[in-house]
Length: 545
Image (cartoon, rainbow, N blue to C red; front, side):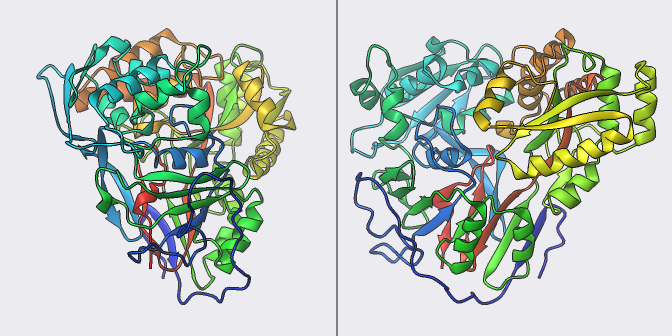
């Protein structure tokens, strides 16, 4: 039976298919006892089932403050705990994070009347996985590491008003005080995210060196967990085996006996292993196969609306894309609906703007993203380019969806006299060239953590944002975004957001193309898929019957 909810595309089917092949061999380096955590039929001594899953990438490292693969983000979210956590609402197999928060490591907290000071009170008896006490000093060290350490997350807290390490203090072992320069709704969202999870200061200092004072090398492959799991074993080429952390503050929140993340580089092989029953949950299966799985016994397709964004970026500092009219013309030539139907098999939504319709303060007035080739030709005429032009569109060769999307974009641009060559790049080369702002046109993806509109707009279009790869800079927009993030009044935030969305639409430094869904396929009996405000899968809530 298929749900007709506009926010969910899901098919639930009948009895499980027979298992066709033997148990998957899990090879991993020595690092702990992985008994009870391998194979889809295993369970712990108390009968709690463990799971084997395969995601859309491998786990390349274990540091929650370092740049890492999407699968590593799922893993690291299980190895740190934050002061506070989102609450969740459940609909069927899926629980989704809300804008409300509850205590995690912090039992309680209060915010000053002016919104500038938050005081957290830690629970009694907190400990890391090695049994050593977790205190307020560890929280301070972790926040300082986020601001001063080697990771990419050092821009998060300053954007929400906490720019200096001295703004986070520990008056005693159970109290943490965070002082910000302005009140912002974004700060609580960040404090519930894994980059602000708690690391062991003692472990970090014991493994630090003069060249690596924050122990980045050690935390890449090791963890002294404050989160729901510990690392039983980890081989970056094979698998990560997680087992429940006996020192976790709330053992009842761990709903399974452990999770093994199996690294399967071939998406079609991942689909085969899921069909055979050797893995319980899979992500990153080719979407044509996902569509077929809608009609296969024993499998359930879960596909949720998402704030993830695929966009077409420009180098706005070089002709012809230094002209907003040219950029707007290309936007009118993008085949939005065809991309969703033909390339993504319906597992996406056509773009509705830089702030998508599913995010707070989305404005319908900023402008629409619809295919209109006549309007595209008119805009080229206004730009003095009625004869068209030629350029090159780049994309990641590892991304089959982007490759197929590029072909449709190329064909439509041909219709308005624009000749586009297509050029795939290795992931490393693509990253290097986007960082250098050297690509004239490119397809890329973005996820704004926290589902916050000002975070979303700043990191895509803010002048100083490291993830603004378009060379676009607009002081008017920068001022609007800074004003919006420092505003707590909901109506005022919505007004500022709408104005900023209009500026971005008019200037069109990039084109929102589609919002790919949050899509997984699971075996019958698997439930508890939980998505937080970073759109990561929270492993501790997965269950299997």
